[in-house]
Amino acid sequence: MYKKSDRNADRVARHARVRKKISGTPDMPRLCVYRSLNNIYAQVIDDTRGVTLAAASTMEKDVQKRVKGANKKAAAKIVGQAIAERAVKAGVKKVVFDRGGYVYTGRVAELAAGARESGLEF
Image (cartoon, rainbow, N blue to C red):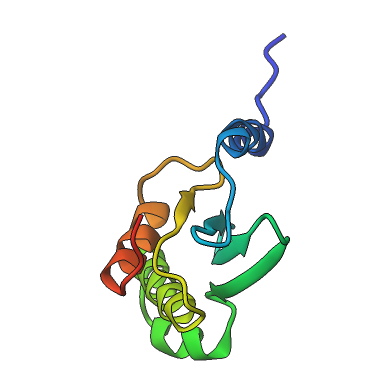
């Protein structure tokens, strides 16, 4: 009998493989992306200290005002711009991009593009 694969379990396995190779340092933290069905979240994390330096998501009130009426890809780009602005304010210019096991297309790619436009380098 055919067993349907668990897509989230596959994503978690891909993310674990990627996380073996990359981690955030104080001079180059990790930009981590989580994508749910309706929302997208991003964090800039220093893994050596285990501290989140900046965060943004479509759940925040100030981001929701900018996202109002936009589709999911446009919302992801706005979240990318917001995370970049907050990271630069926290003193971070360069990051390592952690796509969270998701394919680098669609909303994940738009978030990355928005972050690059607003001043993050990766």
